[in-house]
Length: 264
Image 1 (cartoon, rainbow, N blue to C red):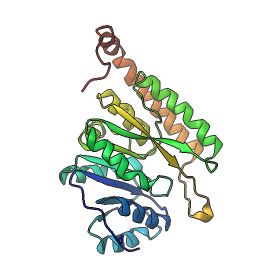
Image 2: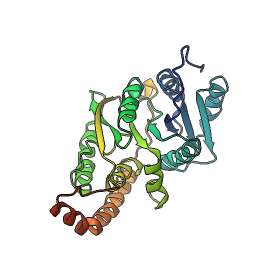
Image 3: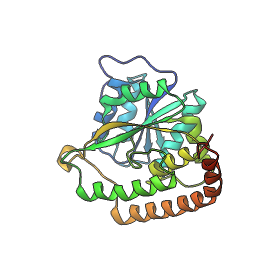
């Protein structure tokens, strides 16, 4: 749990934001890998009870490129991201790359995703997952359903994958979306974020990124619960479809006039 031997120069506009909840020791490797690629890296510990908050704080004490926030109790992934976004905006950052703490996301691609965002700061840069043999077939098939709904809700805006959380978001746009309504605080965050940003006219740019499902003996930890979280996703798509239906007359009118359906 030490700082990277060669730290990249700190960005004044783009940061890496990692929400973490009871990920175990794997979070230390994830954070170290992210720090080897980018600075600054911020971690929001979402009420973890596994002792990693203290370990991460010790890492940050020796590393000026790492900052750790500790929430007093578990509030959900989206709430942890929101906590980081609010502080990022206050500190003057314009973009945040979110990645999971459990080792599934490719830290080596952080610079490429950041450069894509720096080149086109008005877009959201979305990871398009490339699965290997470690991916559970049920998860791979299940996300196709969510992706189909997302494609409908955004009128085919071009979101390649609605669930993969390795992404670069414009901070101000995402904050505006989250602060206007009480949802997006738990597992519903990733999908609802891209739909609502698309509604605001933030265009998606998709980039391939491998995803690795670690076994338990490799330190893999999953908090996804098929029953609970699929119900949450069902409720999320229900309210998004209601929002889409309310917008549909305006969208069709814009399309008839040859305008983009979703505008800022």
